[in-house]
Amino acid sequence: MIDIHCHVLPGVDDGVPDLAAARALCERAAEDGTTDIIATPHQRHPNWPNEDRGYLETVWRGLREHVGDLLEIHLGAEVRLDSHFLDELERRQSGHVLPLAGSRYLLIELPRAEVGPYPEDVLHEVSIAGYFPILAHPEMIPYLSNDLDRLESFVADGAMLQVTAMSVTGEFGRVPEQAAWSMLREGWVHFVASDAHSAAWRPPGLSSARAALTKQLGVDVASLLTQGNPARILENLPLTLKSEPE
Image (tube, rainbow, N blue to C red; front, side):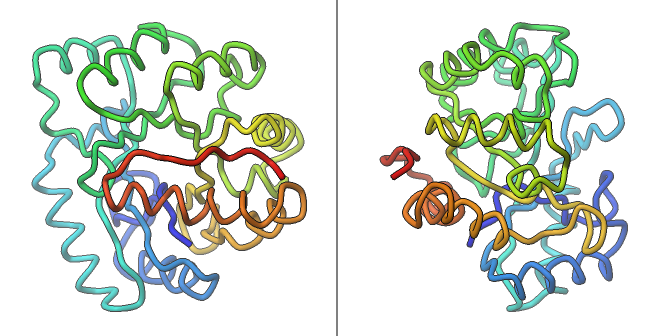
């Protein structure tokens, strides 16, 4: 399995604090069957702006060396949108922003309250700039999870959705679980990822979510969301298959 959303880069956000904790997270993920992780530190977040791309790359190289051949770690980011992001894209000043694994896929974090630019405008501009936009954990964003018609329009316009494994398994509570499964049953979800923050608190572990997906939607969908589509990111290729239930 390939995890496209994981806060495994040590000491840069609310994820793991140091290399020891990062290795513990990686060990747990590898034991669970994950072969590749895309490290996605917060960027452009009020608390963790992480504007120094070179520093993040240095931390990433150190982490890869520390982890060795336990699993493969790629670099990306969970990029927060605000009122200045569209201007940055238009002026091509977003060079510090990290796409996923050097691809044209961009993992986008929307604020929990609808402020700043309309997400529709943002997604359009991101696409115009040549990126494939992926919305991180829409089941956790009230103004999206409570308005499935609007979310469907996002997908119809080319946005991709990533839901969190612990939402799929119900470990984040009933409301995110119900929202995630509504999206999954409609065939709108393109990726299931861990959004892990440590080996113990919000841990990695895609296998439980994959088992639930297999039971409810079939093995082909489960494989597509945890392996097939994520592999297209690593290859920097567009998605070709839909996640429609059997």
